[in-house]
Image (tube, rainbow, N blue to C red; front, side, top):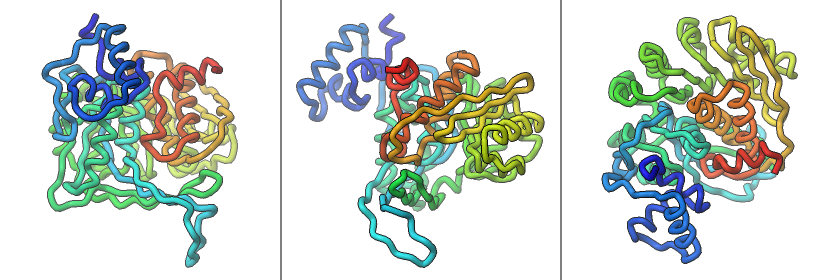
Length: 371
């Protein structure tokens, strides 16, 4: 039994980060007495035995030898977030209320979301060799994501995003690709050993489209389920669309891909069905606080949103896609997975930042249970 228990299970049971569990196990760094006691009790309760071959994510190597169910291939950014009462108009200067720095990037966000939601996740991508790469690797480590396939590129900055969030929680984002722009087909070739072992690959469009398309084809050749979050939206080759199992656009991305203006649930359903007609196995259109619509060749369904206090919508879509991938990788039904992801997205908007806002599995399950 102990061999099936991971450090992430211990962290979840103790209600602490994975980094805290690691510090307790290795007796390194400060841990409060109450946190140490909870970790020790969780270890004893679960019968956890630390893996002696565990290594450190920031070095670009694996923390554990366990197989990953989900491979995330995508961008890693550092988010520079300014909060203000309202976003400036062109040529206008406004005063911000706060400034913060968070780990982000759609690929890294979704890897963290999938891992916190219960998935066993490896991420593949590129970072610069600057100080910001450490912000990313620490966040991934805390969430339990494996970083075997992360590459640091000398002389190139880590990708960055400059985010303005207004009083309503809505945001505007400028992304500078940095090392993400250098991701190529060779990265896919390098990740093939892990791709062959996993059940699902999670992709976005913040890295070069050529690399994404190559990854889609490689995954299908290996019989791996393909989940694509088409953000930011770009024109997709119909041949690539026909190879995608699940696609998760928001209303704006769905309109870009289908030409249908998604103004309500009915329009979202039409857009989802049109994407299915293009060859996608399942299209899931995210409607923010209004919920989600999904369609397959044989059915469609609308799932209402959850009423929550909106603080920051920055990573709601990433929370949704990551949680969806986690549940699908467990063999859950489509309806179960979409409901689970819908709750994850709702929880994410109640917190500031991207990766810090991603909910843990227990939190998602409590929301679904009405607690």
